[in-house]
Length: 409
Image 1: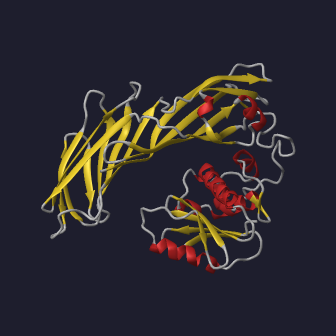
Image 2: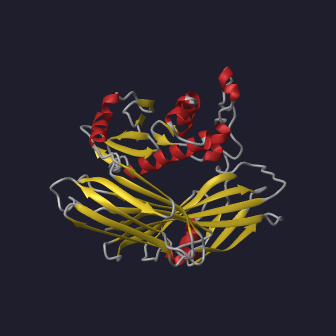
Image 3: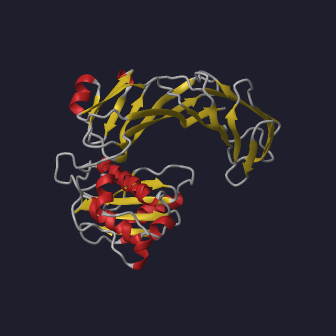
């Protein structure tokens, strides 16, 4: 059972407070606020904390924290998944989840929370159904017109409640966006300590009628820890490794998966640093590698120095360089990575007086993006549509991004 929800700003102010099973005093989140004030701003909080009487589940979205006190035998993963469903619903309604967007749409926010939870049990979490129950905010809301529907949405009483009835489109089309985020940790010698891929598939569906679809994969055996939308027939996936489903209308997340194998990244980052008499010399070289000839974009290198570093002076012929004295962080924005050149950064590092070496080793965090590229090798083999006479337009786009991509010096 989920009793209450608190949405808290990074300053500790409670913006949204919703109770489903009796009133719960705000004091229950005091332990969370204490942990928040004591934590490093760049560090992630524990998703589940132990308070005096309650366990506290929390997630962070931009500068907001969604907090749920738990008691008894409430499954923590259920609560955390519900918090992410709330976040995705808010994004569908307000485009972004910020303090201002929630304050500007208080009525819609509380109406959605009433529909998504019933007496502490998740009830309606499908975005397409919620759009029928609670209309998105418009200018009419400012003059007092209610956005809550007086009737149940079409299909709410059928065996496929995620899809509206009598859907019709002039142009039938469906698009799949596969985003793979590569997590990788390299040691100082360039050897892989840990690597893996987390991916999700977002779908934009505009198909008439009630299409029954079959999606087949190349290298489906690599997919692990899969999580599906309720429309997917899980038994068939277990038997044949085929995704069979009746898609919801509009935008939705079809599935998430992981690939737990050592896979070579599409680029390399070679940092070097040495210290002598309180002064250090640093160099970083990056370049494409095993990228299948694709262009690597949005490349950025972030170097986090220990607190004993008081100054950094660097120069490069590529991109822009910025150093933040407060966080001791150097950011090198390269942008698009040329295939015939290897950008390089050189500079010096100054330590506090009396120190020959820093109190810790710097760490490089790498960001990149590669369009139309699947680093795992997982691809769509075929997509078939049944139960409908038309042939829809189908599109698949793969994007590889850096997740937790860390190179240690």
